[in-house]
Length: 209
Image (cartoon, rainbow, N blue to C red; front, side, top):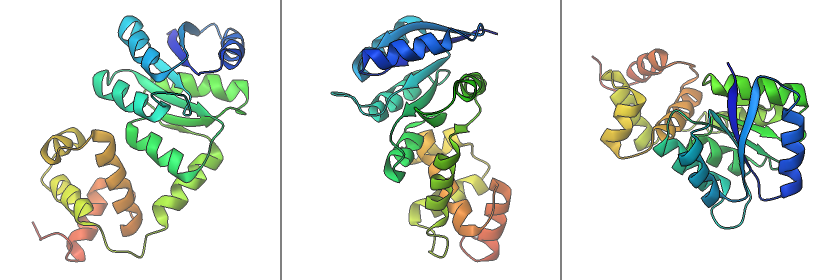
């Protein structure tokens, strides 16, 4: 299957270089290029790409805001952040906005193309040091109690609600629900929804069934 890609970066030279590199993969076609978050929204509406390669720092609407808008309006479109920044706050903001993955601009071509194909299938793709930073941040408050919002989200999980249903109930985005769950998992020392609910009940955080 050919993956249709939209490039979003405010530097034309970067876009040209990325387009040239991606041309080496016959399974990837670049539909269009955008130089801003605002232009990206227009082109996503016009082309409905499979994957958007999104820069973070741009004048006007930045990559995080554009990602949040795209994923809210077009959930079938995957956004893969490709940036030079690997600060914890940038990574977390992008994930909360709904980004499918987060890569750095020094990612080798073979890894970039593999990530694009993986993102098109809905798989999460993180650069190794980005994954390390994200896990460290998630685990940092492990000794802390769950926040009221995290307890609310876990309670809804215990009732059998999906992330989308929880988001609608609490008036938050589905990506934000996922972030609350990841933080709760880290604090509880578990890695899935069922275990989180079980441990939370064992510790008296949630009422028994």
